[in-house]
Image (cartoon, rainbow, N blue to C red; front, side):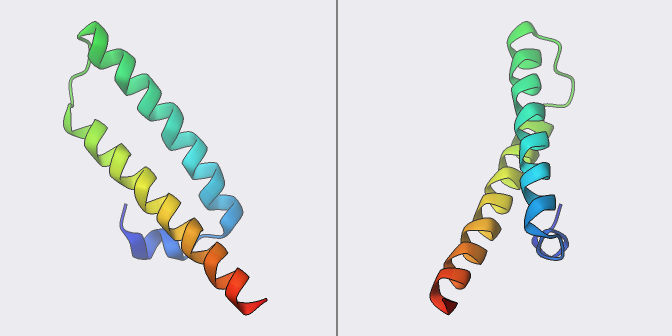
Amino acid sequence: MKAADLRVKTDDELVEQLAQLKKEAFNLRFQAASGQLENTARKRVVRRTIACVKTILAERRRHAKAAA
């Protein structure tokens, strides 16, 4: 998912998506460990999307703190 798509979402939606992505990453780790993972590139995409969501949330917190 692109950063521009994520920036349109609200904080609550981003937090919800972050939780969902963390669950998916957890499941992908188990699939990789048991040898059942077919799409190994998905692990990388999920990790990077998690990082992007965290970055956007941190930026918003910083801007809100600076504005206050």
